[in-house]
Length: 91
Image (cartoon, rainbow, N blue to C red; front, side, top):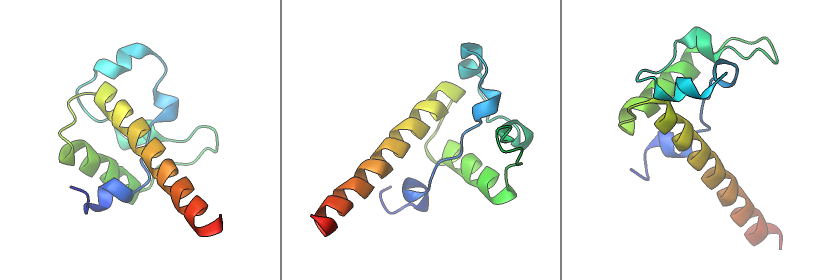
């Protein structure tokens, strides 16, 4: 799984859609329109939505809570990797 492009790709998250905790129980990925970035008024690209769907399927995600947790974990691990390489290369 470590060589899968999804492991190293920045995640896609429906920030504006997540208005309350009840959404965590949903068992399907929200629609592409639900990923609309209301802060910048930008729609999600087809490519990024496909990556979200691929992530849902590849990692066997069963509900939006698992998607949320996976998004957070992968985001933190990617950031930690960047810092590790920065320390190695600069310090």
